[in-house]
Length: 119
Ligand SMILES: [Zn+2]
Picture 1 (cartoon, rainbow, N blue to C red):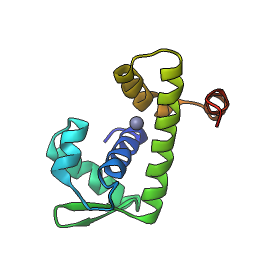
Picture 2: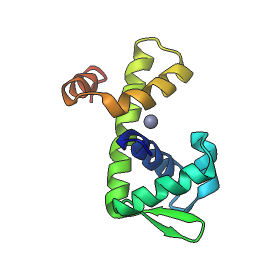
Picture 3: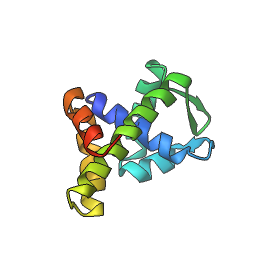
Picture 4: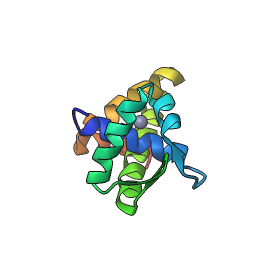
């Protein structure tokens, strides 16, 4: 767990996996992010300390503040992906790049992107 970027990746993954309101299994998170289960365990410990998740057995659930942060990251992700698609970037690259840009984009740039896509 080096930085906040990975925390946001984890929160986003849990948010996406829990979209039907179900609890998320550690193994699903590991698969989605392409990381090892020990890496997930470490990240979950950190997210618990930050108050973003609760752990019930092998399942992870977002707390209210975790859900809020995750939804924010994911909204940014979708807006940036939409922006890249409109530029003519291919769907798979837009998806991958959106997931990187979402963590580092400045508020000013993000506002301009939202304006560009008509939000
Ligand atoms: Zn993303």
